[in-house]
Amino acid sequence: MDKASLIGLVVGLGMIVLVFYKASHGNWAMFWSDKGLYMVGGGCVAVIFMAMPMDKIKQLPGYIKTFMFEKGMSTLEVIELMNKLSEKARRDGILSLETEMANIKEPFLTNSLKMAIDGVDPDAIESVQRLEILAMHERHKAGKKFFDLIKVYAPGWGLVATLIGQIGMFAFLGGSIEVMGHMLAVAVVATMYGAVAANCIAGPMGDKLGMRSAEEILNKEMMLQGVLSIQNGDNPRTTMDKMTAFMSQSGRAKMKLAA
Image 1 (cartoon, rainbow, N blue to C red):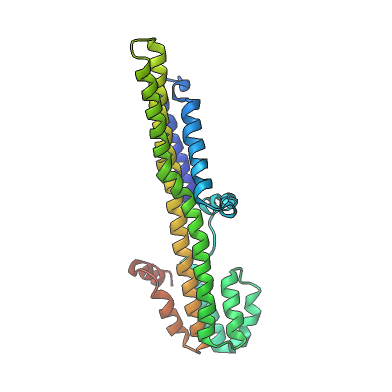
Image 2 (cartoon, rainbow, N blue to C red):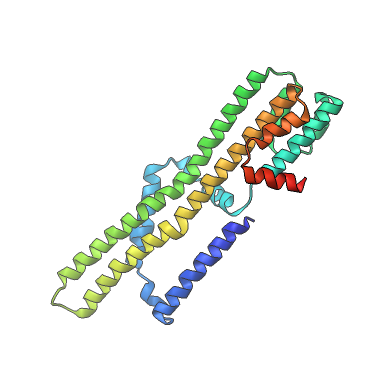
């Protein structure tokens, strides 16, 4: 479980519930509008189906899982593992890494190591694995796109419902004040639904998926450079320097302190 995602969800939901309660004094029904829900919810569903292919839409559970749970190795874990593999290869030869592959859970790294152990040309390894990184990046873009569509269009559908409510209100000018109040409530609540969907749910989730994708791409690039360095017979210190080149200065300082 990703603690940051969980904390964000709990705090965000808590603030919404707290403000709703203080504004309504427990009269939760004042925030309900089936018409606004139909317009914003149904409109977002329509946009997603119009903008994305079905095979990408079916992957929604995977997008949510990626948001809620940590996936893959951290940058520090990648550096520690590559340093361990580099030292073993330097000491016992690159063929000795075959015994380590069973303990590695990252398919990208195991495939890279397998090609290096088999003596595949370094340029070929780099070419094949960069295609793998590119394909992964395209898959990740679909997840972010899903939530970006909601972020962009949910407020717009809320605005459409608002305009409909205002038209209904104007149509009943001079009539029943209850009908006018109901139409005004539809207008305002629908806008709120769109704003909540975009800014409290879809926007943060899409941004988290984008950051996760960037981190995974960086880690795989580190793995690739580490394997190529090991295959080239570089000193473990050189391999380590190539790994730390991907880190920020603060990250390098923390790693030195940990060492």
